[in-house]
Each structure stands twice: as structure tokens, then as C-alpha cells.
Amino acid sequence: MNILVTGATGYIGKRLIPFLLNQGHTVVCVVRDRLRAEKSYLEDDKVFVIEADFLKPESLENIPKKIDVAYYLIHSMSNSSKDFESLEERCAINFKNYIETTDTEQVIYLSGITNEDELSKHLRSRKNVEEQLKSDRYALTIFKAGIIVGSGSSSFEIIRDLVEKLPFMIAPKWLNTKSQPLAVRDVLAFLSKAAGNVEVYNKSYDVFGPEIITYKDMLLQFAEVRGLKRYILTVPVMTPKLSSYWLYFVTSTSYKLATSLVDSMGIQIIGKKSDINNLLKVKPITYKAAVELAFEKIEQNSIVSSWKDSMVSSGRLANRIHKYVNVPKFGCFKDYKERQIIDADETIEKIWRIGGENGWYYGTFLWRIRGYVDKLFGGIGLRRGRTSPTELDAGDALDFWRVIYADKTKRKLLLYAEMRLPGEAWLEFKIEDNKLKQTATFRPRGLWGRLYWYAVLPFHGFIFSGMINKLVNVESQETIFTTENVSNM
Image (cartoon, rainbow, N blue to C red; front, side, top):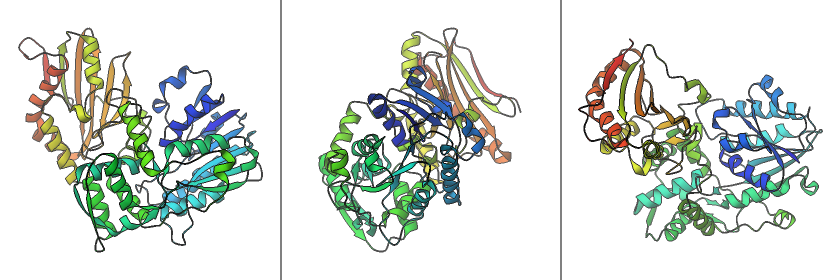
């Protein structure tokens, strides 16, 4: 079958595509920015990458008409837009209007469990999208899931932060809220097995794990898997705002996402039973088994995707990343350095391992201080780390940077700063003529931006020099040409 996957660079979409390919389907991936598409897709004759934005109906004409099944996996946990509910509705309507002009027989939508009378605004939006997607032209299959557990998922990473950092927790009362977490493996099984299955046409199913457990149980079971003893005290006095700050400062989440999570976590998420497990022959695993499986993936360095790579994890890059690929030349301050390379292959490998647990090779403690300052002023700090310890792709989060361009064959890595700054910043590593060229570019915003640059200038002198020296295994700067603080102001 020809299958369309929207949200192809998202947490679920990125994992679903290999499932569909293994089943022999041809997959059309719809992305807003081709730079974020998997490079392997461009070389696979069973995959077609289409650039389109469902907020812009005119861009959808690129999507082929010959489609059998379409997955609608577009949604957001971001609070960056006050009218995100209307935006999600517009996306759904534009999707439906276009899909009705194609040969599509079935649309599959992954929603959230919405059985309570009181819902968070994100769950209300999911429910509204369900209504908008209904059509007389195609069959709609809806799967409603609660908390999804897997390596790189937001729930997994936030719980991991809490458990591994805090031996004792004074936590909000919503930790006693009940839910039925579902392994990402089982989510993908439901989604992939439903494609073309007429028995699930025009049906809606709650999909959930075999246990009803509280968030507190989830934390304690996670601790068991990690071999840690943890103590949790829940208190009734923590307001939603305080709860959001608690998550924000302790975990790697952004404040905007923290507020969304707190808004949702106070709502009980219990699914309604159906025959879907038997119908699709899926036997969901327990929460603890899902956590154990997630750590197997981590140990094998096979994390397919992470919520932290989502553009909403920081809120800084709401637009397409290709907008930031061309580093500005004018109106900027630049710190440029170059070094002769001893071993180009070794240098590029070191560049591709920069950040995260590997650190920044020189003055890492100063990078951490900068991360703490950023967190204090409402930024993301360094806690996102990186998805893979060895690989980088466009769109990946890298501490408080975003990977804008990454190509080992062309030996170039470009990062865009997502920390709090009075301006915009880029950091580029490029190997040319057997030299490593390292350029930090800062485009200031107003007087504060210029004052900021001169305030941090003394630190750049040895941080950036030390970093490039470590990357090329050079300890002395005596015979190496360096240009410092070039300004085109």
C-alpha cells in the first residue's frame, strides 16, 4: 500500500516509518522542513519525502493523490501559542480537505484518552481534532493513548531526571493521579496493524497498558529498574504554577512544556475496554517491562528519536530550521579560529561527539555555569543533553544548541543557540584545506546585545581557543593563525 505519514519527524512518526517499510509498504513522509528528514529516506526507493505545512493549504498540492492509508500524527504540547487549539483545528481541517481529494480509504489518528468530564486544554484539543477529521470520503480509525513510555519520550525522560537526581522528593499531590501507561512498542503495533484493516474502519479505541498505576508508582518502579531506593512525600499545597517550576528546575523540560504536563497530570487517564487487543493481536507489556526495554535501547545506542529534539522543547525555533542555515555576515560580531589538523577523521569524530555527557572538551565547568544562568532566567540550560552520544542530525537538540546542519561527508556542523540571549548566535565547525575552522557568530539585539558580547568576550578568548585545540589535539597556539573578535558592525 501507499501510506502517507504526517508528523514524520516527530516522536511517533519517526518510529512508525520503519515498521511500515518492514511490512513492505511505500511511505510518503510529509515534513515541514526537508533538512529534518532522515538522510536514509532520500536513498530509499520506497520512501518519498514531501515538504508541506498543514497550516498552508497551498503547500499540500505536493502530496500525491495515490494514497491508500494516511496517518495523522500532528499535535503539540507547546504553550508557545495562546491559540494553539485553533491552530490544531486548522491543521486538521486542511488535512481533511486535501485528503478527501485523494484516493485515501483510511485515516488513522493517534489521540489521547478523554473519558473524564474535566479535561486539560490539550486533551480537549485532541477531542476536537477527532471531530474535525471525520469524513464521508474515507474511514477514520482513532487510537486514544495515555502516557507513552519509551526511550526518548517526554514521560520517560522526565521521570528519569526525577528518579536519578532526587533520593528524596517532596512532590505535588498529582503524583497520586492514576493512569495506564503504554509502551511505545505497543503503540506502534496498534498503529501499523490497523493499516488497511476494514474491521477497525470508523472505530475509536482506547489503547492502554495492563496496569492502573499512579505517577508515584511509576517513579518508584522506575527506581527499582535502576536499582535505586527513593522516598516520595506528596503535599497538597503545591499550586500548578509551583508544580511547573518544580518540574522545570529539576528536569530537562522547558517551562512551557512543564505547564502543559502539569495541566494534564491532574486528570485521571483510564481507558475503556474493547476487543482491540485480540482484534490486532497486541498484548501490551507492563510499565516496568517498558522501562527495562527502553534502557536496552539506550544501552544499544539505538534511540530513534527524543521529545527533546522537538522544536517545542525550547520554543526558540518555531519556524523552519533552514531559515537559520545561512549565517548572517553583516551586523554581527564574530570569533573565528582555525587550526592545522593532524588527523581529520579523528577531529570530525570528536566534533560529532561534542556536548552532552562528553562535555565541550575545554572549560566544561564554565559551559555548565552558563547553563545554570540560562535556567535561572527561564532558558533550557544544558539538561537536554543529546539524543545519541555519537550521531548528530539536523533538528537534534544539543544542550542549549540546536543542530541546524550536520554533514560528515562535507565535514560541517552548524549549531544555533537556544539559550536566553539578547540576540542570536551560531557556532560552526568546518574542515577545509586540512584545517579546522571554528566560527562563533553573534547578531546582537539593541544595546544590551552589544554589552553582552563585550561582557563575555574575555571568556571567549580561552574557552574557544581551548576547545579548538582539544578538537585537533594541539596544546600550543604559538604557530597557529587566529583571528579574534572580528566585527562587521
